[in-house]
Image (cartoon, rainbow, N blue to C red; front, side, top):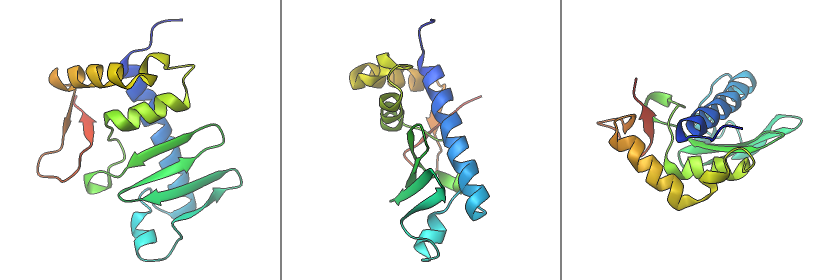
Length: 136
């Protein structure tokens, strides 16, 4: 098995966020269900399907898929492709068999900082968001 890289972790995490937000959109008509909660149209915690639930928090959401929990924050302009070292760490802990290296916070933080320094990800300027987004 080849060694997993930070890029692999980011790709896997964002794939799970996409899966989760696609399910939210199917169920609620939108990927960003924060406004539905804030306007009291849905509860803070609820059911998406029989074996999938959600829990909203601050500016984000946890979706409990049948196999894992994926925790993400909504970014500017309702973006769902953002990440930070904490979100990547919690995801790695959900799938330690795939990303054993990254269940060490110091390792992940060091590689994440290098990733950002190389310009592979950056924050969106003019936004209060603390999320990073891949640069193409």
